Amino acid sequence: MNYLHQRRLVLTQAFKAKGVDAFLVTTPVNVSYLTGFTGEDSYFVINAKHEILVSDSRFDEQIKEECADLEAHIRPLTRTTLEAAAEVLTKIGAKSVGVEGNRLTLGALEQLKALAPKLTFVPLEGLVETQRMVKDPGEVEKIREAVRVAERGFRMFVATLREADTEKEMVDALEGYVRRAGARGTSFPPIIAVGERGALPHAPPTAKELGDGSKLLVDWGADLGYKSDLTRTLRSPFGTAPSRRNKQERVGYDFDKLYAVVLAAQNAALAAIRPGVKAKDVDAAARAVFANAKLDKYPDLKLDKCFTHGLGHGIGLEVHEGPKVRANSEDVLEAGMVITIEPGIYIPNWGGIRIEDDVLVTHDGFKLLTTLSREAATLSVS
Image (tube, rainbow, N blue to C red; front, side):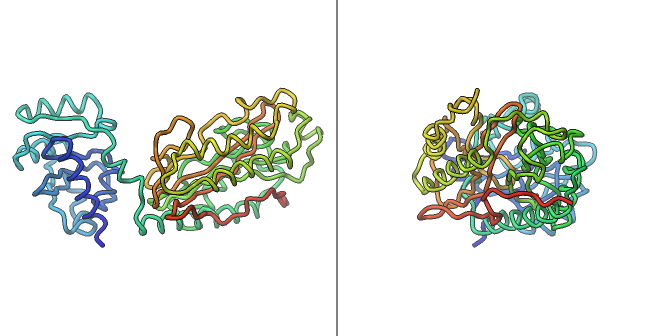
């Protein structure tokens, strides 16, 4: 099957149903999704009779290689891409044009209206993003490969850790290993947090050394066009009791017991995944485990403070895309969706534990795309 052609056909049906006769795609990731073009600074114009990539001479040959079935409009250097798109829309006889209401800036929309005053521009939200939520088999395989590469990079990373490595040095090293494993780069700047800094879900890297904490939280992914997103929390071999090295970590919390709660929450969420289930119900399944774990018995640990983010999100061409897997989501799971499941506990002045895996929704449940062990483990550090 020609999945690119099918995506464009579905989009055409969607914007026609909204009462417009053409659609202008300006977001690079959506242009790529619909056309296969991997360059930048290009727009896509589509109606019932025309499919035109609007670009410039830098990408003339690339378009021929990647998008041989599409018409290309190569703008002159004296015109902007927006001006060229307005010209193309006028030339194909469009009357009403849908634009990406959640992506196109107000300034760009006003420019379009001025450039093509006879056309009616209608902001429409989420037409392409809704399609992107359900992956075709080729997309699933690309995400699976991004997971494999991320895991290979992680294994190289943990094999080379030293007690004196700082968070910043570890971030730099992990990015290098993921590229060495085959990725363009990481899906996002890795989050690496030592000891009590794991209480910050998106902790920026510092000069804190690995030996200064009793645990290490690592959140990373690989970018191969399609992306992966994983998190593992590991015990370091430097003990859990206060010491000269990890004296900032407060006592009174048992890593293994708290890790078991997070893993049980993830397993409960996984068990709830199947087509037709509301994403918010999967989130609720994980939170029920936290509620039943009676975490309030720990000093100053309240349920509403320990799991402060949504359970997960869709992943694909972007590291965060639909569906949303959180308490207020109205998204409904469908076979072919790929989501993260990432419950966590965060305790100020102690640290955090998060386990994150990439999951395919199947016709009868789910399949883990990640293969790294989800059990508690201790680093071996040189």
